[in-house]
Length: 423
Ligand code: BJ8
Image 1 (cartoon, rainbow, N blue to C red):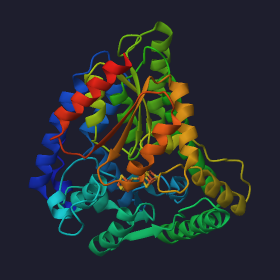
Image 2: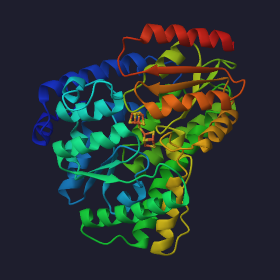
Image 3: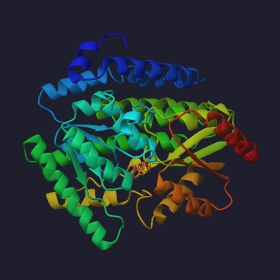
């Protein structure tokens, strides 16, 4: 960062000492993992810049948006209808965190055996490290896994601004009805936050923005099907992570520009790894920024990650919202339908996920699947068994880990043995 943002961080209420430590660690990790990669597309320079300003310029933009009267809404799950946030002209930020920070603070409120993702969003807040959380007017939780459900109750005691969407456990008729009503209730909540009605035109505008991002990410996903892969898994993961907090118009434009370049690379046969390098599909729990551990290990071992079957990946952008609505009712129905397609392991049964993984494996020509579950993430740990059976003869490795670095050596050994087996 070239600008000094200390005054802004002080005003927001961050713990300046802890925060300086966090930025130092992030910057070192980024240099080691990202900037050392070979043959990166030029279009990644924009994303390098975004990371260098992750708590700088983007926070300044949001701060200014707030001063101009816009609201800021933070979410933790891809179930929260982003288009309704955008329709209310609010800023939408995905708040999940991928670093082991503030765990000790978090463990004063939640059990030790809670997944790292939950500990991190609590920990970042409690340690005074997250400017995004501080700037939000509303934090939207959801009833997905038990850990999140109960953590939101505590998070509301701490922040006083949590709203929870009721997500059904089953995609039954009554489950779908419940969800439809929840989408309407969320729209009303957004109207009360924004202090005005959300019109059909507003929703069209929100839908176009959200779908624009999804189309760009779908394009990126398709391009990763080429051999040699034109972009590393690390870089593609980063683009997906940045999609949760960047300005949607700028993000879409820069991702499409990156894809233009990747199309050229595919035509020329330029790749980030040699043609024929093992191609890995990573599937499972979401990898929030800056959780790059598994990708760094896989790609550091000579393979290339060609896809993420996760919420920071395909599950977030696989389906578009049907924009052909003309009335309020149609808009609500289309939104409810679009989100009910999400194949999160919190549902029972969740057979669509198995079909989606097989389709993705074929589309990306993956040689093997690494199933990734955060420790204590019961839904994904449990579902690994069904995934392994569903992918048949495709080589499959099950990994459970957290945000810490203690198991890096052990993971490296397991991943390398897996890749040798594939070769
Ligand atoms: S739609 S995956 S974003 S709930 S890792 S907190 S599941 S114990 S994040 Fe998720 Fe929405 Fe589902 Fe996606 Fe719980 Fe697992 Fe932790 Fe998780």
